[in-house]
Length: 411
Length: 226
Image 1: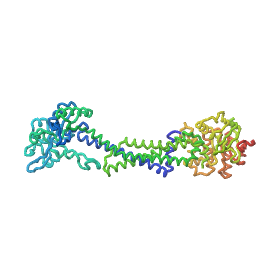
Image 2: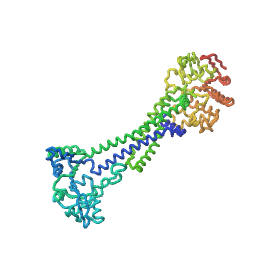
Image 3: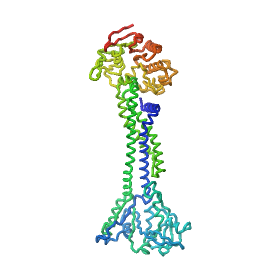
Image 4: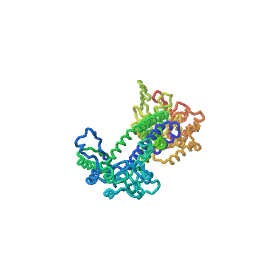
């Protein structure tokens, strides 16, 4: 008897006892549906985290920050250090071979006026690298250039929300606005930047990147010369030429900054570290889902084994007859194993369907990010087959070991 | 000689006690013979039938079937012998309830392997027509009468063209008229040259055979030929 005939026999047997088939497969159905849901949630969460970091400039990016220091008990070296400055940024750009972009940042709030309207607005002094590092796009005009920085130009780029506040639908390019009493020419408007976390994650359903849109961008040199005098930076983001060069860039940057500061009063954080941390948290969270999936599958398997054993008892006579007309132990073993696999994989198919519905529900009702791929479907289906094999084994062995005379005599 | 049984014994352990079901049976059956093995229940005739049907193995003694030493065979080889050489007809028919008659009769061919499904169904249909069930092919066992069920099980026993037809109380669950019909089918098969072995406690059934072997207390008590 070959495998196809066994499958046919298993399917016919199941069809002829529908109530039993339903009861048998409930556990598998729930288990497989859980597996589909868990995997989709995991994949969806990963994809979303990935997308968020891509939107912030990708994995090539490093963020350098000043470490917190106790201002009362500073060491002499700490006191001597100027902390992160625009000159540090220039030094990194010149001395680190792995660096691609360096984007220093000094932020201040100023009164900004156009015609007779005045607003409090956030002004960022930065350089031409800024849009690349943070993956920003220009909607019209241009961004701050090297020439702007070299000439301390009074030019400004508008975030789209501020552009709307100042100009409404009016064309802004070439217009003059005053920042803290100094006239600046508008040279460009940024494209709107947005990212929404699905579900109850950080930010909820608002644009977590809106602060990009609520900024004015001017050359950092102009910022220092006109307003701050000090070139101490609020933040410094740099990026490596490739993801692979991130570790070397960390080393190079540390060397340059240590030499200039004389003390390690800075932190260098990579995005990939943040992603890993996030993934670890997600993995822990997913243990709960895995536990549900595992328990369902295990219970489903035990139910299959149990029903198979009951069905074997019910069919001892049948096994005897089959043996009498020429079935060997191997044929009987295969018949019952294949039946278990057919039952389990039928449950698997139904479970896939239920899983797809559950994923849809999780996505639309709970609003959590999900990603349902063919790979996930395949894994879940193979899981049901594996459960059929594992839990069908014992009943099949039991059936195959029956003594034909005893089995024929069984009432 | 088709069947040669020499000094066959079978002992069961029944709890602490030992039951000696066969105490040394020697018997030879030629090809084409029509033999009845008769005896009251508990005489050992069922045990003898199980061993000759390759469902069971003897505790000691030899069983040679068609020149092959069967008593030495493994479980798998025994299954092969049952499939190819022996056709069973049971008292309670033993058709599989969820399968139609063609499927039931084709089952020995399934275990034989190497035959396509269409070929198996064709041969099963042919056997069912031979026993007069050509109009019942798609019926399930519970949809037909007892006599028809027994005819179907004869068709199943014949489908692999076995050397021996082994019928264990073939009329035991039938009324006397239907029983006579079944016996006439077996008689006909014997006339066609089949080796038929009847196991029964019923003298009127045993009378159909040309040779009657009586078993009592695990041994052959007497033998008649007519």
